[in-house]
Image (tube, rainbow, N blue to C red; front, top):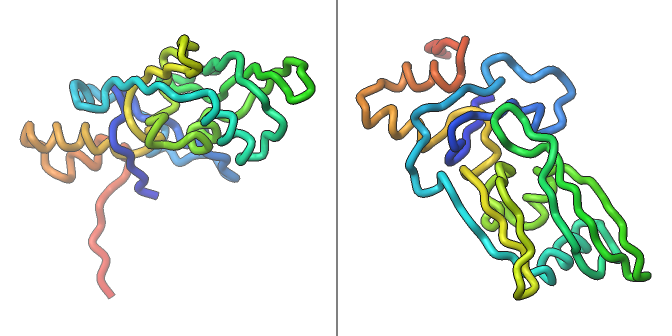
Length: 178
């Protein structure tokens, strides 16, 4: 699988930290430190999200009876800095506080990958206007080839074979004909 994403923010991710795999992740996708993905427009991002929107998305995602969200914390960091899980303290419709822990990737997709650009969330703050401010790095799941890093490598004169070898270490290109 030659998966890719927009911007890794300095380290690609192991797919087993993102998706549930039936088999061990292939060695060529285990994640690499990426000095080429720096200074792009997706390196750092901040997004304010209304609590009412988060409640609506979580209810639609199967987490029913959430009345209000009290706190959100991204936890269980991987080697790349991304979070594996999110701990959410919320007020149930019956008025009692509860805490749930869900996959960071599932939370990101539930909210919207256009809003939460990655699970590499460095800070979450509740702000006065009934919203949370999310600050993070990169864009996408982080697995495989980083498009911004590959662009920088190409701009520096690296050829496609070198770029592919960097992002998919241990692989080789072969020509197949029918």
